[in-house]
Image (tube, rainbow over all chains, first blue to last red):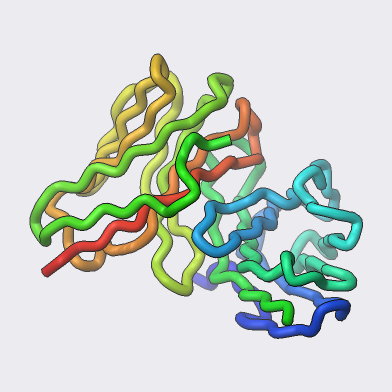
Length: 115
Length: 113
């Protein structure tokens, strides 16, 4: 079956511009997660959705970052007024349910480069 | 945070050898641990997991060992193959969270034919 998909796969933007990154989770998965991976680093948790609600936004680096999820499916991560330090790979994952033991399935990521 | 250095640790092995990748975790309240494999240009892929009530779990060609006393996790890969070349990450459920994972920095495994 189809896995988690993300678009675009690559995005180059100028400093100060806004960007939107999209995640299509596996159908039926209620939990959705966004992570950020900087060069040579592990994954950094950004935000978690259960259905359309985001109980934990604690990982969002600043108020320039926001995310939403609609219809319990597609999620969009928006970065306003991008900065060079925002350059990273943004990964989305989904899992069937929330809870220990439910595998998080990752998408291929969106590589964001801010020039 | 994870007690790994600023540079990505690397491990280079010969095809057919066994590989051992290590990870230290810092949160003693974490009770669920996972190993992920990430190939270039792809998202992380689940390999194997272990709960804190176990100290060893085996999969196909992989074994995870957990030492809670010293907060150490290891991944053993038997008969390493070129297709095993990737970055390997350990992850813990942050302080016992039922959704939030904290990842280590990763180890780059290179398998030489």
